[in-house]
Length: 201
Image 1 (tube, rainbow, N blue to C red):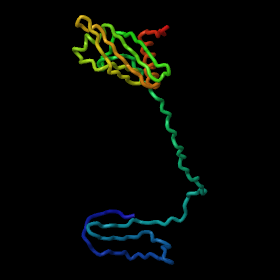
Image 2 (cartoon, one colour; image 1 turned 45 degrees about the vertical axis):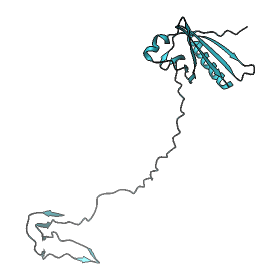
Image 3 (cartoon, rainbow, N blue to C red; image 1 turned 30 degrees about the vertical axis):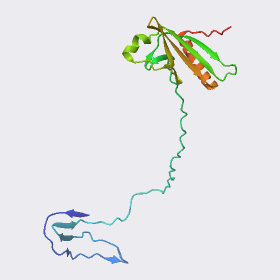
Image 4 (tube, rainbow, N blue to C red; image 1 turned 180 degrees about the vertical axis):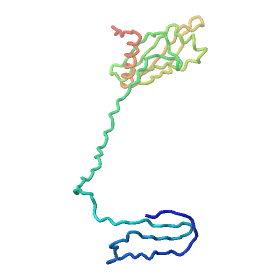
């Protein structure tokens, strides 16, 4: 083991007169003390005494360690996505964003083969008359529920003595699919507002 001692300049290296005997290319024995001084650059190295190890006191038996297996990576199953249904209050609107508070009288007619039908909404003194001047003009009848929006543009005001008294809106269904969609809305709207379907005699 080398020991750092002092600082100097570059000189030739010097061996002490002690001999080190070698046999078959390996060191067989070492003298009790070997002194070797080397001046390289600005560092002086002096070797410390080396004593050969003749016998080790460590005893034990060889053991074998099992090779660790990497943890098995089981593919993660995708989670089953549960569809979320937005619960939207069924409502009618003449101006988008403004609910109509007046409950209309609704009349339904349908062809004999069920291929088409019509719904007639009659609003008496609708609340939209009170707010149309503030929020905008009537652009149609919007039937809104959790499935989406059904729109009808056939909307007319009813006037008495030059003053608006009511609104009549007509919604035409041209396919059985449109009829079924409208009836689902009407069922939700009726449950929300306490309406009851009365079949014509």
